[in-house]
Amino acid sequence: MVTLAAVKASGDVRPAPFQVRGSLQTVLSLRLLAPDDPQFLPLLLDKIAHSPDFFRDAPLVLDVAPLVGGPPLDFELLVEQLRQQKLMPVGIQNGSPAWNEAAMAVGLAVFGTGSAPRAVPDAPAGARIPAIRPVAAPSRARPATVIREPVRGGQQINAGGDLIVMATVSTGAELAAVGHIHVYGALRGRAFAGIEGDEETLIFCDQLEAELLSIAGVHLVAEAIDPKHLRRRARVALEHERLVIHTLP
Image 1 (cartoon, rainbow, N blue to C red):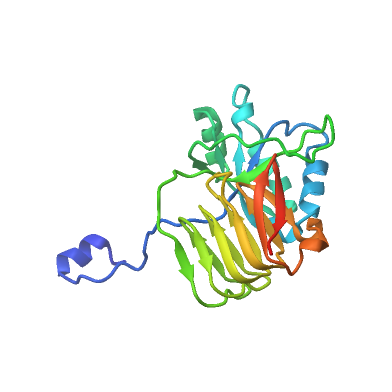
Image 2 (image 1 turned 90 degrees about the vertical axis):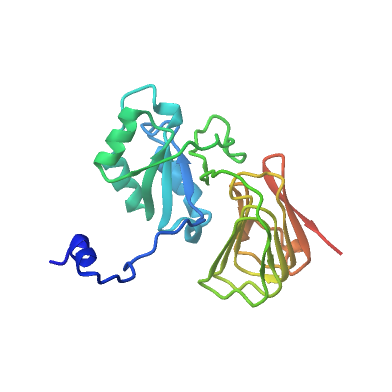
């Protein structure tokens, strides 16, 4: 076995076989309000059913802020239940030392403090639905990212500021930006603006055919888009806890 010390001693300096880099990814946060409620899983499954492709195999952070006053959950059981629904818990957020220790014992990472999500606007009166939002990250001013070529299915574009795409975004492609998203072409994939929680961000496109739209964690799936907006120029904004589409001339 060749150790790092042996390599240094021999004077054989070689590039490291890995790179460690920062990365901006779309990670969902599941805020646990009452995980012992009998309706927890049925209501969560109902929410997932509206956009199964969006949630399938999605990395998930468990936000335990409302629960840390009590004893830690049985994370092993909860993780297994979520994985059975094709969700992939990767860590917890807003935990106390005891909760963090319990989470790490079953292989979950510990994430930094996140912002509190809003209540889900379309929840039936009295229902308790776990709110799902992106994990918040420190905000800082960054230049716009400009993409001049078509974004094809399976591609994911992440931008630390505004994102400008000067071509078509195909079905199965994903755009994610801290700031606004502008698509000067058809938007057929998924677009996530304001991924660090900025509710003032907007999505613009020349032709709206999106699979999913999201601003600051509030999302709208294709089936819920009014047909009158389809294949039209559009501006999407977050207004009164809902995504609103404005058709442009």
